[in-house]
Image (cartoon, rainbow, N blue to C red; front, side, top):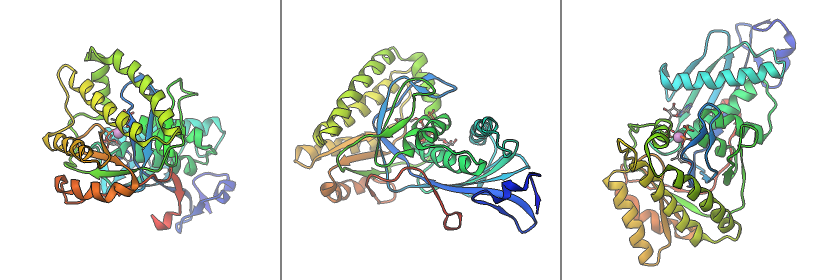
Length: 352
Ligand code: ADP
Ligand code: DP6
Ligand code: CO
């Protein structure tokens, strides 16, 4: 073997292999799903460490996965997403994240710490459209990169690591429902919270890239909205109520809190100067249709992240009725029914 690293032991590590050319390479592939917040995260207490001003709670989905392969090289970091090579902001975000992984590798005394990485990723859902691509993207990257570099991290540490790529990614490490704690770098991670089975119906109305990223939108909100302090305190209250409703399996209260908290977030965002608006007229029409369904006794509740695409939260047995009712609003005549899904995990690279 002519290994990248003189110490041959590295080649014999789990998942490490020798390429046909005789180099010792190591790679890992991970899959993660987006999560949709029922109590939203919108604001950072620490911009660099990505610690939120308040906790949040979400459902991890079982579709729209991101699959990411990280391969160690000695040729500089590269980032390829959906068959396109990226340089610029999204590649920079990946490199900053890999620098953090490498610093953890230094701390762990690993001989991989000086290597760069080739990152190849596929998002099956829309990217940067308010359907949580940054959550599935950085959760998958955290799991794949930690493994490729040889770090031995538990779920909590992986959640903290994913958080540094994108705050919402901390929650995509967790199966089903997750609460992400505010706090400091040590204590801000996501963990499972018990909640009744619920379905989300995805209503994609426009899947182009948003004009203002979540990162930029949060900064603008903190700097210019007079309502920001009230948002922080009310989110803390809503989270307490939501956790209690989840624990007692009270779908009606979960739904009411979810819809109201989403509307509050979009009102907060609209109150920026200059104003920011993620919802479009079709999004509003979907919110109205969901409210009309409720009037007729079909229990569904609307939410939307930082983008125009709406999700309807409902009881599993009503999901088909809700999807049939909303499909006419969608861009591609498809309203997928999503159930609680799996947290980010390693997969066999060959099946990626
Ligand atoms: P979204 O609503 O999709 O989460 P954000 O504004 O939060 O939108 O984040 C979008 C950004 O997340 C992208 O511009 C890119 O930088 C990053 N991102 C998305 N998917 C991936 C991925 N698979 N791997 C790494 N980064 C990703
Ligand atoms: C509206 O996690 O995408 O989806 O931490 O800056 O990467 P960064 O932001 P991101 O923000 C998500 C905002 C939201 C609400 C939520 O998912 O809780
Ligand atoms: Co995001």
